[in-house]
Image 1 (cartoon, rainbow, N blue to C red):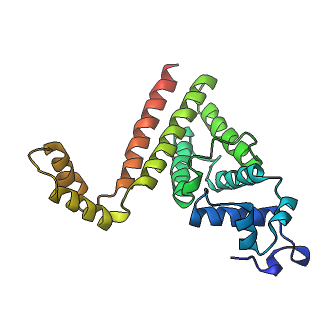
Image 2: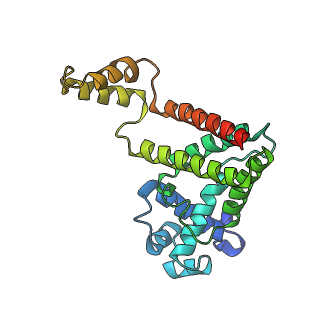
Image 3: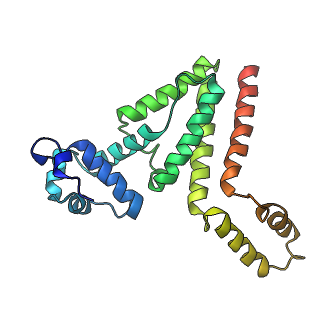
Length: 223
């Protein structure tokens, strides 16, 4: 969608933020692989070359898009303790990555991080350090949490179902073509867990997150 001229600043000129927002929206709808300066120019109803007044090149565009995504992740410097802060950050990051699935493989790939990215990382480390984590333990915690968050988001994005009804339909279809006596544990999992009322794969995130936070708490206390 082309931003209205009244939203484009003086004399309808684009801003860098508007270019980045349009790029993020395009990637959300079409994927990052199909994003080009030409297609972005078409979305904004401008010549592709004019975009270089706002972004230096494609890498600069990607840097700005990633920085925008980091800026959407909620951080609470006033949370009551590192654990609450890390839980809020983890759940928010998952929600953001569900909105921007193209970003999962890009968040830690950029070599020119923007201000929102730097603020995000600094705030996470600051929360851990304020919670008593040593510098090495804060680094371990950051790595473990990011691996879990990004890994879960990647798995969630790849699943061939969405929502309880699609999950149930797929599980039923797999069961119908799978000899129960040949795969007893898969059958048991499907019948006694996946097909139970209220099951959602996304609920596994909270369970795994609590295990990690418990482990980090014990590890930090032991150092």
